[in-house]
Amino acid sequence: VQLVESGGGLVQPGGSLTLSCAASGFTFSSYIMSWYRQAPGKARVFVASITQVGGDTVYADFVKGRFTISRDNAQRTVYLQMNSLEPEDTAMYYCTDPYRNWGRGTQVTVSS
Image 1 (cartoon, rainbow, N blue to C red):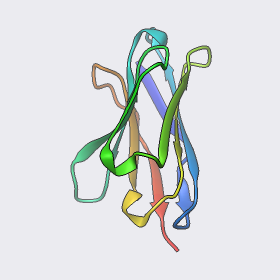
Image 2 (image 1 turned 180 degrees about the vertical axis):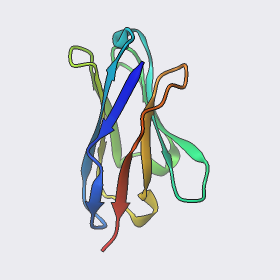
Image 3 (image 1 turned 60 degrees about the horizontal axis):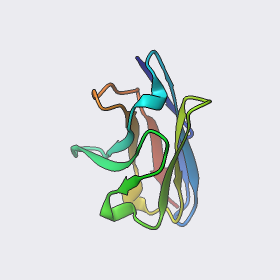
């Protein structure tokens, strides 16, 4: 199993970013996929998840209405569209499968 996150960076408050997670080594379309994040000195927390064909999504309260998770099973990729970013969104973002395989993460920094 390999999960490779990308798309992070430095963005100003109110800005947007789209994260991507490319998956390999397993039957991607068969699994719920999730995004988590970990801020410095804090525990890793759930951000969003999406079912196998994308029909159902779940979001943490702190991102509802701002973030959108999606997936492309043909491309074996899960996305996280992040809008109206706040400094509190600064964290390392990870994607994961139900067996808690993790990528190395992609850093998102929201700062003016």
